Image 1 (tube, rainbow, N blue to C red):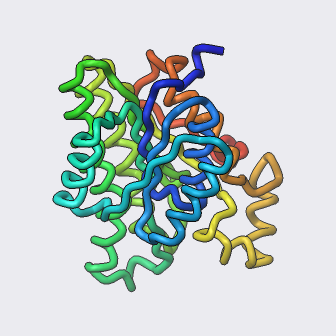
Image 2 (cartoon, helix red, strand yellow):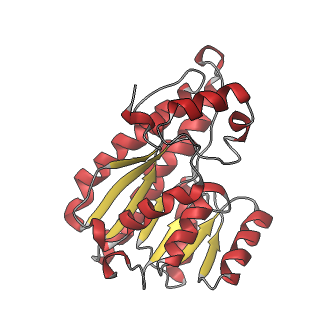
Length: 254
């Protein structure tokens, strides 16, 4: 199915040494893309590279602070100097902070906003510049959340950052669509990852989630693969500025 074939494309997926990012990287590779996985933990990143290479995928690695403008520019320049052009960017790196807003310190707020939202702007802007310069278009996929549209107590900083990701995605589409760049977002529901394991291990929260979700289960990282491949492929060439929620139907019901 050529609409979903990513052969000849190169995808950079941030925060992809594990969890959702690794699952999406693997899915893009299985659809033919050369992938660049990213992480700050060298051992974990190398383990992910080895596993993907053993599966027969073409894998490169990069490591930089997604909230550091100079580090981003240096990493992208290094890739460009090696003759690597990014056709697909998945802004996945992120963090969570579970604390009532009355107890959130300014430095904690700024760390969440910078990691989840400012990084999406910085990477999106710098990669889009390269895409526009090449004149061949591209795909930018930002990872939002259920909290891009709704809120829960104790995750105010995260909610603000992911709400910002949704509107930033629309702004990117408004400005870059004329260059044949499609910018969209994915809003994962509750997925089993290292970040959510404490919630899954809490019987009260786990029961609430199972009963609240029409699909009656937690999501798994592999549930995102179909959506990320679609948004990275020619199949979505006229889809721009949208967020697709992959949440088992949670947002569809009261």
